[in-house]
Length: 96
Image 1: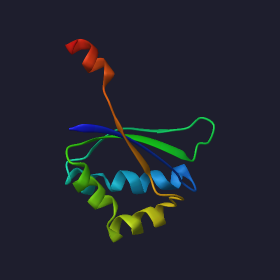
Image 2 (image 1 turned 90 degrees about the horizontal axis):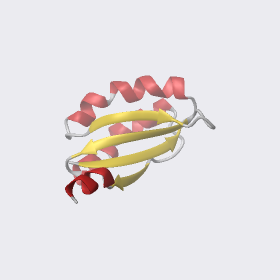
Image 3 (image 1 turned 45 degrees about the vertical axis):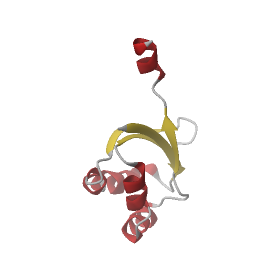
């Protein structure tokens, strides 16, 4: 498993969140587990999330389906999510 941080802007967080929550079962089928959803204090429509993902290619495959595109459009997502792989430095320090 690997941790991925992502972010994107939405038209309205309160309208977006139910779509995101309802889509978790589909993402879980790819083994992806959402660990955290946050939003910026400076722009409450800028959403940040952390996923634990076993296979990035499978996860990206789901994100690129027409179904995901429809959900994102209905949810008011304004831009494609940007994803970044995270390195767990605390775990490295404990092993060191």
